[in-house]
Length: 215
Image (cartoon, rainbow, N blue to C red; front, side, top):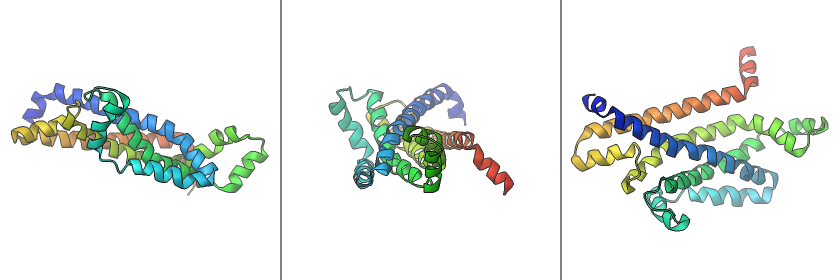
């Protein structure tokens, strides 16, 4: 506790950096995964190639990706952009299948009813299909959020500032206080991400609260 209080500024600074590196890719990954998931659902022959192809990205070890990306996107190895790109790719890898399956879970009769009411394909997607798919997509986002918080810490090995540096610092000095603080901070951050996603899901699906209240 004493070490934590003595280094509170460092903890807060690295927490902010961790939030940025883990949180922004969640948003970017979702934006990219939405059209890809829609394509996978709309055109059935594309489902397997898109979901399997992007799923393979997740099998790439994070440290290898952090090291290889700078030569691909022409950035310095210590540039946080490398981590942002890598985490966005991992997020897309997790969410493409989730988005496709979420859209696929929308009942056919609901889509037909929307079309009968004069909804075009685009309007039906944003007004009917996407809102109804939110609970499934939210579940995928929660998994991606926890995964991002964990994987970002690996970037400490190449010197990217964030909570993972407490792990490397502690191991280098055989000093456990920063390791414990880093672990607890990552756990708390993952829980906060999860709570935010749950609250946003409740905000975007008010009909589920009404249904639950009636039940």
